[in-house]
Every structure is written in structure tokens, then in C-alpha cells.
Image 1 (cartoon, one colour):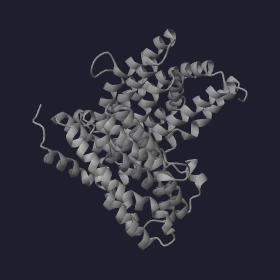
Image 2: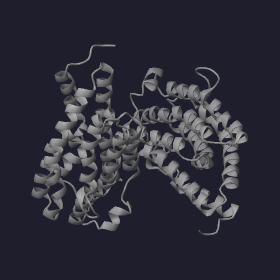
Image 3: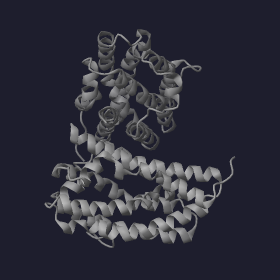
Image 4: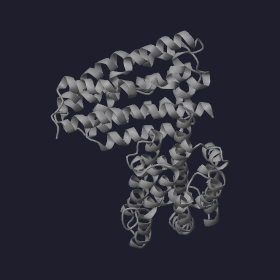
Length: 229
Length: 229
């Protein structure tokens, strides 16, 4: 087996997957350029709901596969971030508010009538990955967090500039998520770099992050294709 | 719980999913109308390779979940149908021959370079389904066999008519598969109808067949979308 990468090389390799992140997908490019119709925005919000509702479960799967109580304690916060402490709170509650701000009522989101088969297979695949792989592979997959703060910040600006029909209070999810995700990304990166000490583990972690970029990209492929039919 | 459907009603409900089968997908409609480019045909063959190579595994997963030796004995034939008795034989060998007939070399198929992320998530989702659900749900999912003989027969005619650049000896897979799939479909339908005696089991079996139609449809969505980008 080859020599392990140094921590700096390994970090650079993970960050080097930047180009596979979904912010450069043609669908997002069009949305941020102001070219999306209300139907496009609603289809994106309703499909991403299916992803949002998997996040607490995928984080619980990571905890379920992790033998280290210190890591489990820290990772637990992520479940609460998404689920909140009661109905209508947390990331899920904020996503329902986003739905309302773009003109989707709660029933339409909850019954998943707008969720495309491509979204379903990609998100279900992510959940299966986190249930069946070692915790550190799933932690590495979560490192799309490295790329997301800037993208979310761009989204807030682009939506305010181009889509005045979207109620601004719908953006709470992104506003709360940006500082949280910066903190999470820094913790996760340190954890993955400390844990992956062999070249094989490092390559596996890089592949896990590439896989996660494909989960997100496949969702947008489905969302974009549905708008063209 | 509602009354169970009669065998005739249950069979009609399963056959009633005909409209969700992938023969009516815009991509297949264009291929059969002679409007596909060589790149379209090659992309389809290379992506469907990923599905073909999962079939022996999904059949083994069904056997792995089945407590009845009589069913297991019969289902075993399906593994050999796809894997053959040595390299280059069976459904896999015939699919490699189809690849050659459309101008894809074996390396290109085997290294999966043309396999799209949407295909991967759909097929992996099908395999996870067969690994984790009761054997009779996966058997019901296999009932797309009810719809496939006619579609394969149309394909042979359409390809011969419209695409003279495809070598005719590449069609062996479909020519062997048509009589086999008719026999398999009849056996599987009898098995599922005999086994699913409660309304809940019947509804679950119908949902499994709908899920399988989505697996196939999601592959074509990805293949069609990739041709438009």
C-alpha cells in the first residue's frame, strides 16, 4: 500500500472535490441567475424536503455505527438541529416555513407528491450508505459542509435579488444553517483527518465525499429533467 | 383491514401497472421511432449493463431471504441464466456481445465509465430493496416480466428497421430472453398470487411492482437527461 497522505495533502484532496459540489450544476446556475420559474423553485423546495427529512436519520445511523462515546455525544447535536425539540421547530420546521414562503402548503410537502423518483433513489442511497458503512466514511460524506456556506450565502442574495415573490422570512433555514455548518465542517474535517491514517482509509474517505456530491447532483439532475418534460 | 382481492382482481391490479412500464418512456419511444443517435444507443447499452450485472445478485438476495427450498430451487435457475456457466456466457456474455455490436468495447462496459449517477442510485436501490424486503415482495417487483416480452420483441424489430449500423448478432440477449421471461413471468405471477393472501400483502406486492417500474424509469430519466446536456 502507498504511503499515507500528510494531513495537509489529505485535506487538500478533500477540498479538491469542490468542483463536484452541486452549486455548479446547470439547474443551480439558472436559479441563481434569476432564470427559474416559480414552478422550478417549488419543485426544488419540495424535492429537497425529501433530503431534509433524511438528515436526522442519517445522523442517527452514523451514531449507531460509532463505538466512541465522545464522538457520539458531539454528533447527537446534529439530530436536534434538524428535528428541533418539538413539531414545527428545527431544520424541518424551517424548511416547512420555506415551503410556505414559496407557495407550497404543508400537506404538499408532507405527502411528498412532488418528490421525483430520481430524488428518492439518491436520498435513499445516501441513507443506505450511512447505515451500512463505517461511521468515519459517513462523516467524510458529510464534508460537503466544506462547500455549502458560500453556496447558501449566494442563494440568499440571489433569491432576494431575483425572486421578490418569495417571502423573505422563508430564508430562516439558510440563515441559521450557515454559522452552524461552518462549525460542523471544521469539527468533521478534524475528525476525519485524525481518524483516517492509512492511505486506504484516506482514499475511502475521498470516495465517500465524491459519492455524496453525486447524491446531491443526482437530485438536481432529476429536478432539472422534470422541468424539461 | 379490507377484504383480500380475489386472485383475478389481484392479477388485474398487478397487470394494471402496465402504464408505468418503461416502454412508454420518451427515451424508448424515440429509440423505437428511429430517432436515436449512435451515442444514445451506446449510452443506453452501457448504462443498462450496470442493471444487467446486478440481476444475478438480486436473484441471490431473493433466495437468501426465502425459507422455502422448493422456491429457492426454482429461483436458482435465474442466477445461471444471467451468469452462465463460465465467463462470456449467459446474459452477461450476451450483453457484452450487444455492446460489441453497437461499438462499445468490453473495457468500456466493464469499467463502468459511462454509467450515470442516476442509473447507479436506481439500480443500487433495487438491490437494497431485494436484500432487505421479504422474498415475495422482491418476487412481485420482478413482475415487470409481465410487460417485457412484447417490449423486447418491438425492440428487435425497431432496431433492425432503423439502425442498420448495429450488427444483428448483438440481439442474442433479447432473442434468448423473450421465451425465458414468458415462462418466468407465469411462474412468478402464480407464486405471488398464491402467497399474498391478505389485502395488506397484496397492496405491498402492488407497491413493489410500482417501485420496480420506478427503478427502470429512473434509469431512462438519467439516460435521457444526459443526452440533453
